[in-house]
Length: 303
Image (cartoon, rainbow, N blue to C red):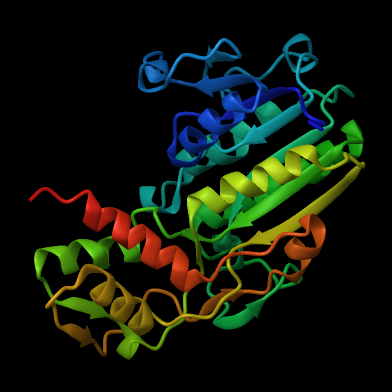
């Protein structure tokens, strides 16, 4: 049973939003997708249960009348860490957009799902990072803005008396980071360079798993509370192991170079016991997630 019927999604035209929209529309949800670009809809199939709202929510927040139409908000919009350390941009895109969506305390909104980030923890150098780990607002303006957004949602949850779920997302297997970079080098026959001698562990999930998780959260009964959930595989894998896996999956002749250069971040692996308990969800092996993604890249190569 769908406990959510009318869903508002910010960042609908982005990496995660684009993957989520199609699945939710096919499952019969009524979706309003927020985008700033009025041509965003051109990249999506038409669905009778999909509408577009063209608006910068940071500058033009939801009105009470608008908010009262929705029972669920999925907030994916925001500037990423890769956009640099622009304080004003992160403030507007991450904090003010959140406030713009959560400023109306209507009781119609039963669930607010927010895509936060692993970066709020800074650089903890741990393989067992649970939700009780301290956050580090001094790590970057991006981290500060996401932590502040989480805090705005705490205040919102108390006033709206609804369910707020803060998902601290790890990196994505298919998100254009290390795995895609190494895959590209492997396919082009370039050296696969891993820093820190390849001994540093990282945390990843595939975006399709994120979509599955959202589906499970949508059907979960809404109870008034504020919950933080680490979202990752919770599986330890070094960058050297990842490079070896990619080399094998691409049948590449590339050399693997274990550079002495230190990585930008030390070990980072989640403890996801809380997540698995919250949604009764188990993740496929990270090795399989990476292998399947890399093989999909190989099959799409021109010959």
